[in-house]
Length: 127
Image (cartoon, rainbow, N blue to C red; front, side, top):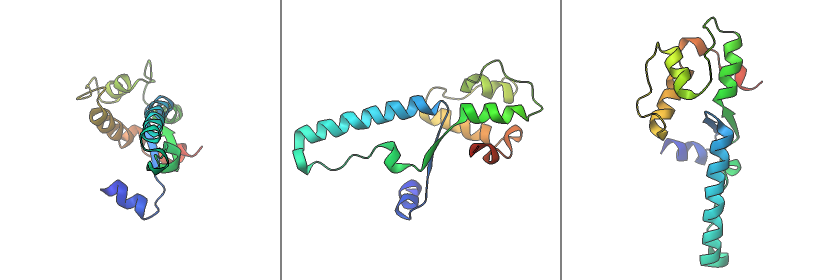
């Protein structure tokens, strides 16, 4: 509901994902398949199917963001920037609940972004 209200009010919304390029390509591929199916079934009466670029102002790949933030962090660098490894590294070997599940991953990403090592991440996001 909040998303729809914000969009209706004209707020610019950013698509945030860990490895965003993968998610964007996958979602746009599904939207394009849906667009073609509706077009073949309904012809010119098919409702328009938006692509992600029609919905979001821009995207933010948190892998790139965390790598930028890590340069100025006092924490030891993690061996890799996969979401589960990064989460475990920051939160002392704690694991993501429901990893590789959209809800579990977004909650983990939110906790990471709001954690102490990444305070001020917004300053890195636009660079």
